[in-house]
Image (spheres, helix red, strand yellow):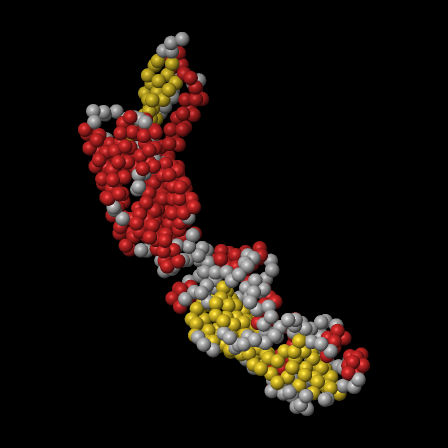
Length: 592
């Protein structure tokens, strides 16, 4: 057996002597050339060369019978890491006595892969500063997208999409990702491919910085003997310390006639059985969707993944006998409670009312653009509004009462604050529908947003022909409904139920609905702010116990303040009011 000491720069006499001492025979010193492979069979080749030269030479040598030992130097860090070679050349020579023998290579474009290959945004995969990566993702929020990719293995063709693809020898990939490749600690034979396909920005960040104990959603694992990657456009490609662009890539596991001595531990050959774990990757339809638009901030889900929730939503959208019975009872109870001026009765009607169901269903129909849910829920909502107005108006006509109670009055002054309450309630309602564990909290949501009582107030105003009362109460009802639709839609989007195709359209539709109700509420809010100024003016002139505001009305461009004031305090009101604010003062005498 001939022993060669091949060097690229200059021979190290200490190493040559160490080889002689260990093997009892001086090596033949030769200058290393990456295209020279004409060595005698069964030779021992001790090689001191740089990474780029080794990658090509090891590929060219694959059909030569030899034993190869690589020596570390400053120019081959990739080979050192890949084959677990110690940084001290003298320790590397100990492989001659005992080492794991590698008899295969992973070849990419006619050279040996000395590290993990990365296709796509390498900075996302290799970066360690989570704040810098997060900031970069936010900065490029509307540019991050998956690229379509076709993968042909020995047994199957897969069409999917990915953000980053990582490939390498199974043993090397296991060292880098032990959590993803728990079944690979003792194997080193197959090409192993990791496909990162996050379906939202948040999922990408969680995937990058989270500590998963298995293969998380959005990650696929392929182990095979040979595969081809094809992309319709050029992609960033990084391997063996080089960066380039490419769209067609072939990665093969090739047997070698030579034995390469490595520092790998507990690594043995196994049957080259193909393994595909691709259930977490986008299918062909989803791949086309993600390739055409930037990654959304939140995940996009398919209907199949949430069958139970959609069954509940579809049921809530329908007009059923049970729904009608509960709704009629709640309307009658709320109307009677309003005439009684009884808060407990009205609260009971709030809890009983089923109107929240079709409103939340309509929100789901908007985010999914599901025509059947939209049609059923809209029909239920409109029928409920008409029925509620009719029943409460009939009661107002039939009952011998004609004065506005306090419970009625407080539902005739809708403001932006009511819209805010509806929005918060919509978040809670949607979360309750999506999460059965918090479903019992929906009663509290129904009380907070109260759809039926203002509807009944509007009906009473209709029965009394009090059009201002009818308009303001109906405005509150619409504000509550639209607020819930907007917030529930946003929450369903956050939870991943948005349509794959109509995310943007659904968002703009919800914004349009919100703005349509916000403008009239702005006027009411301004009136409330003006009322607060009037209170402040009176408090600045009178003692708190000396006056009582009965009501404040707004009509004909003026504000009328009806106030009762102690007789001895009347002089303090001299000059109060103006062209737009008129005080109607009633003197009163306090009985001591």
